Image (tube, chains in turn cyan, red):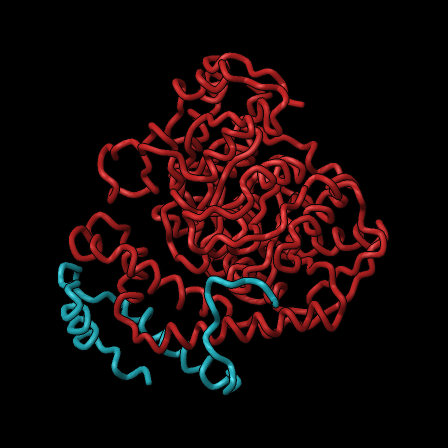
Length: 62
Length: 446
């Protein structure tokens, strides 16, 4: 799941989004991508199937 | 009700003297303050209360910088007040000026601002200027914003009270967003009562904010002195203390004992399901912030701090499935938190606000008995869960380290039960004398 986050693919992805004015990929940025990918995988494995994304603008418990 | 204000000049002179060392204020408003002093009405609920405003919130006639070079040099002055500022003026509060914020409201340091208890340390962030200004007596209360702890972290580090209200209770029109679904606006005050007074003025539906909700009008002052006898207050068996600084843990446990002695029933609950909150918080903040700032990311990336820019880039490019997975996680912990409150018939959950105390300006990590943790992770780990669930959460002072640095107690309640968390906070505050302590850098010491 995390293997796609090599410097070239991240840089290519950012360029495709028009974010090509940024500096060369730093280790920190790559680590950030890796970390988020890992977290998402952990969440996915621990979530009950029936849980839908929350209504982000409703904090009530009704 | 209120105290007749001195002249605008004398109010701002005392602010200026202390703030030379503190760096809490980014702009003062002598002209606006003069007009407000002339219109003083002692019968209004906030009459004479000096209020500072975090510099991501619009104040008519003043620029909004958000701690960032992106907003121009100098930025154009705002043409109108944010809804919350307008409501404070209508209630008789005196807006003295704007306070420093960590860049784009995205950080826990607020560079350039010192902690009134120790100038070598940070006031926290991102509402660090608001926390420092209240603690140093530059104002009676302040407005802050809280996306992952940005009101409660400075409140804890500066030894004052700070409340993140329920999501949707306080309208955000005229407030620069960081993360639409996690941003909250709320009060910081020297005392819990100050927070309650300010909340009463700013809470309530406004049609200009689509996330604003209609709720029954509540008098947040009415039950402040009702005590905690018979209430059920939970403490977590773990998570908030894994890891934690020993002095902070001791102060927290002592605070819980005070609440027990005041008559509350203390219940231990398992909230280990909150692990992952930090990751979920960043998985939601990053794409929402990146979306809001995408034109700046494309056109002026060099004007954004590299660390914040990295977070925004990650948010811009990560798959949408990551965002949606985090939103599912958010729903799951909200469900579990509701069950914790209902199954245990809880009125509140008490935790340490943050697991440590004010960091040095250049300090990046805390070293705990259980290991090291980055400063930002430490702070956001214990505050962000309530941004994700949307519950109200209050920080009140609960002691000092051996070096005289403040510590905070966090009290979280059911959605829209601000009156309950304020009531518990006020009872605890009245039973202790922490609020009587003043920092070395304070207008009273000048």
